[in-house]
Length: 230
Length: 230
Image 1 (cartoon, rainbow over the protein chains, first blue to last red):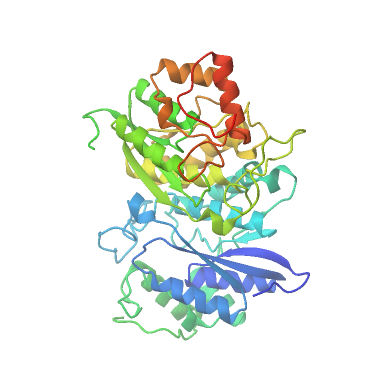
Image 2 (cartoon, rainbow over the protein chains, first blue to last red):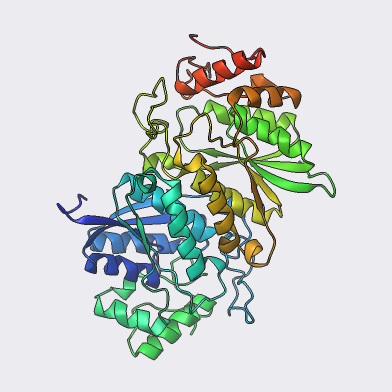
């Protein structure tokens, strides 16, 4: 799909989940032609990629899917043969679903993409409230990435700034649901479950499903996806 | 291959070129069990991966090759259908062989690897003298990466430092050749050419071949690879 003439471009890291899907709509609202970037990293919840594709198509955004064998690296319940936890750990512990250096890897690739596509921004749907224990979802990580992005690229060295935006950084899930609803997000084209069945049906009990269910409930908005249990 | 008992581990970014191969031997000399990490990114000089494998085997190092479709990102003479230049540009211009954000991407993946393998160091063969115009080969980039590596990982947040070492950073090519020779590097298992033929024969005229030839000449050491032209 060709970019609309004259429209500035933004790379959107699109996992297919609720947060990154909301980011895609925010990018459009901010006046950007979004270029969606997803990663197939042998995650057990690969159905999210299909959702990402459908959402990108329905928003007339280009969509690139990169294969990235993070399961070779391992160390996560999202790629390894470890049970997905039903709750997030307490006391500042890092969740089993942490994927080593994932956001650094994803942002680095998005940065390369942004450089070759002349995009001025990268949108990433990270959030430091709900899953506060992921190291690479915090504000200090993101500020440091902005600094290194200038040093790591031709664009940066030549004074072209690629801005890293995390518009959901400090929002509660219920606030994200409300915002997504206002922006007209089709919730049926998003997938949050860490452990869906083969048909993509959400389990309803993993930490990510629980958070989503709670968010919609608090927002007083009806979700459009089904769950195996709830 | 199992790591020697009790030996500390280091991830070595091994391209198969002279510099990263030298780094593998430096890691061993520094007392580490090296874990070699290479990337197949549809580079035109993919023969370097074969060299990397042979070198890793001959040094009893584990070797992981990750597929990384950087050609989808594009923007480089090393992955795109652009002629490889025979000389590096002058006046601080960034070479056509620059691959967008490559070292940031490679180091990010190496960091994830180091974390899951309990490695204490990452060795990278970057050099800011010979190809001074690559943005991501400079010292400021590397220091910033050390900072972000602490924020991006579980290891970093838990106080386990993964050190980023670039032992060749300020060395001339002739000095690297001398050091590699002292460490017993088998030069026939290294490949520097940006544009080899299908059998892996180095062209002898690209910027990288020229630099290697000059380095060996200045060091007064005989290279063990052949060239198509010279």
